[in-house]
Length: 100
Image (cartoon, rainbow, N blue to C red; front, side, top):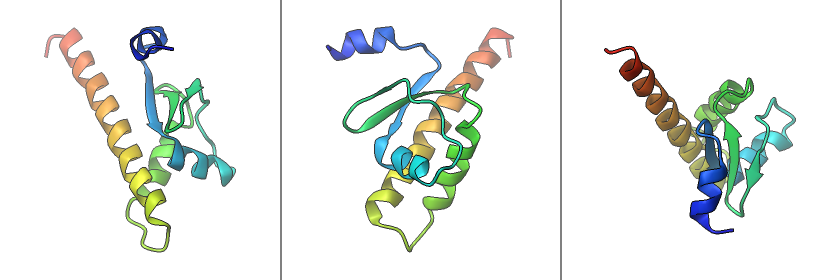
């Protein structure tokens, strides 16, 4: 599917997180956001999923680990960045809508 069409079909509250860390998190049987779509390197999840907070907390922990494979640490760091940027964008939108 063409990338522009794929983006147009995704709800605005869905974000793409790195598949490496998402799979690692899910493999440890932790609460994990529902995957709405996947590519080879990304998993699409909702910002409104109740398990998002658990995924973010786990990624923040792994982002500073030294006893994990580097690809997991790197993916955890990217996961933190993606989620924080998306939440910041949501906060800006809310502030703009209330006129701050």
